[in-house]
Image (tube, rainbow, N blue to C red; front, top):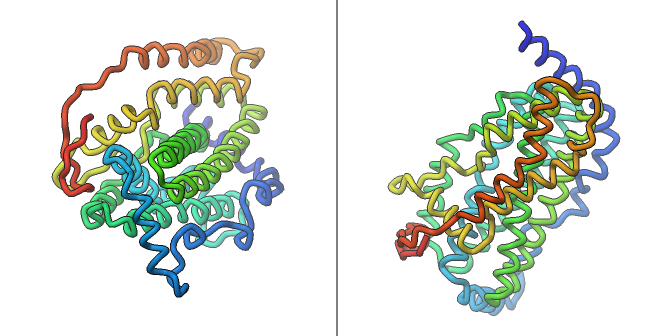
Length: 334
């Protein structure tokens, strides 16, 4: 009964924030006519020079290392599983889009967020296809498997856990895309540098939105908010594509993650930094009047980043080679 009452109170808090969300939507979501689209960053097939444009495009991509391709493909596969993420978001209590075209502010946010995120997979997919350097059928099979396998971030349809998860995850994807952009520039592909940069910009804006939602929850319901934050961190943030599967390689996500760690695209240190950033951003150390389990949760959260940083300093690579179907079964050191 207690859990039911807590969940009911969380629903009431989410309901009470509808006006706030509605007021902030124009800042959190960009108007469609002011938004970038995938075709803005790809060769123009309408142009009489389209053949030359594609040659230049492919020439720049020739310099990309297999390591970077693996990370880029893994990021793209993650983005392409968007249908699963929207389904999850609409399951969170209080955020449900009842009709599918509801004018409820939370429903409008969910659809707006999805429409902006949808461009990411589209753009990366088309980029990789045009390079000619990737086994696109193997990539497509992976996407198919990932959506089939689903997505369970252990948020229990709880909106507080959901917003903590998305606040963390949007920052993680921003870091990953920005680091890929930096590496792409170093390896001579300015097109990919721009593509990953613009996607990272979207992720930064979405991170701002979810953190803002959670900040308001901390203002209204600090005890349940900090208990939810602690619970989500103890559960650990599961990456959206953790059920990635090529159909033959059940360790695909682990191997992809090791390559990302090796290139320092996304590391345990980043995980630690994100925790620290959220703790500071939500003023966890300065929350007053907490007692009992809420005070213990506060202490736990305020030292958690340091623990992960210590773990990161002990991290080492196995030094094994793994074949990736995405790049025609070439081996990459993980």
